[in-house]
Amino acid sequence: MKRSTQVWLSAAAAACFAIFGCQKRDASVPESQPAAGEPAPPEAAPAPSPSELEGMTYRGFQVEANPVTLVGGRWEGDPEPGGGAARPQIALARDFRLVGDLDADGSDEAVVLLAESSGGTGVQLYLAVVDRQVGELRNVATAPLGDRVQVREARIEEGRILVDLVQAGAQDAMCCPGELVTRGWHLLPGGLEEFVTSSKSGRLSLETLSGNEWVLRRWTWDEAAPEAPEVTLAFQEGKFVGKSGCNSYFAPATAGEMPGDVDVGPAGSTRMSCPEPAMQIENRFLEQLAAVKKYGFLAGQLALTYQAQGAAEVMLFERREPSAAGGQ
Image (cartoon, rainbow, N blue to C red; front, side, top):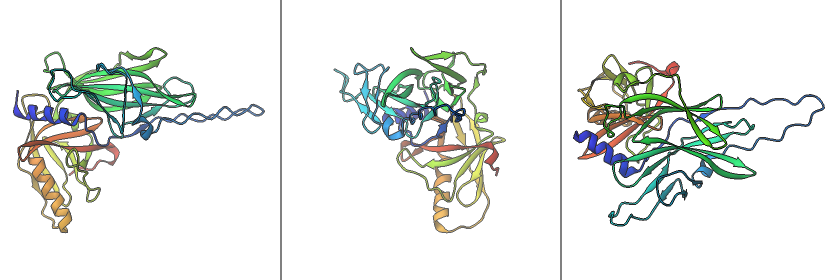
C-alpha cells in the first residue's frame, strides 16, 4: 500500500470522522390551505434542530454499548479488553442535516450521518433518521452505508433518501474505494429499506470533480479558512484551476495508480500584486496544493490530503452550484 494511502487512512481514523461543514439540504413541504368552513390542520412539528441532534440517543451500531447517547455530537466507549488504549467512538457529521417528510405525516424528519470507529483504519458510516413523536425525539431508523465509503452528496427527493457514494468495487481494496454509485432508502414502519436506483455506477477519477467549482472552507481538520479572499478549485482539461486568494492559478493534476491518488505538478499563475493578507493566503494554498497526494469526499465536501511536516493534513472544499461556477 502506498504511504499516501496509509497516512490518509490514519488521519481519518484518528479524527473519527472529524468533518467540519457540508451542504445543508432542506426539502420543504408545500403548505396547503384548508377549505372554507374546515378547521385548520394542526401545526406541523418542527424538524429536529442541529443542537438537538448532537445530544440524541442512537442505535443500530456494531458496538456492544448500542444504543449510545451523544454528548456534543460524540460518544466514546471504554477500551476493549486486551485492545490497548483504543476506544470505540461514534461521531456525528457536523452541519450535515437533511430535512424532509419521509413518512407522509405532514412533519419533517431529520437525516444525519454518523461514523463509528474502533481505533483501527476502518470507519463505518451510517444514515440515521430522527423524528419528533408526541413532543419527543426518537431515532426511528438507522442504516449502514459501509466501511470507509465516501459520501459525495445526499438529498431527499419525493420522500426518499438518495446518497451518491464512492465505495469499494469488486476489484478495489477496502482502503481505496473507486466505484461511484447512487443508493436510495424508503422509511417504512420497520426502518429504512434500501431500494435499487436507476443510476448506473462509474469509476472515481479526476473527471468526477469536473462541472463544479469548489470553495476552500478549511485549511486542516481544525482550522477554518477565511471567507475572503476566496480560494477556489476546479478540474479542467487535466489541471486544477481557480483563484488562489489574489491571482488565478493552474496546476497539472495526474491520477495515480490507486483510486483517489493524484500527483500535482508545479503551479503557474497570473502576476497581480495584492495586499499582504491575500498574498499570505495565496502562498499557503499553493504550497499545500503542491503537496496533495490524495483526493476524496467527506460528507459532501471535497477532501484533498497533503503532507505537512511529515504528517497528513486535509483541506476541505464546499461544492458550488455549476450555475455560479467560474473558470480560470
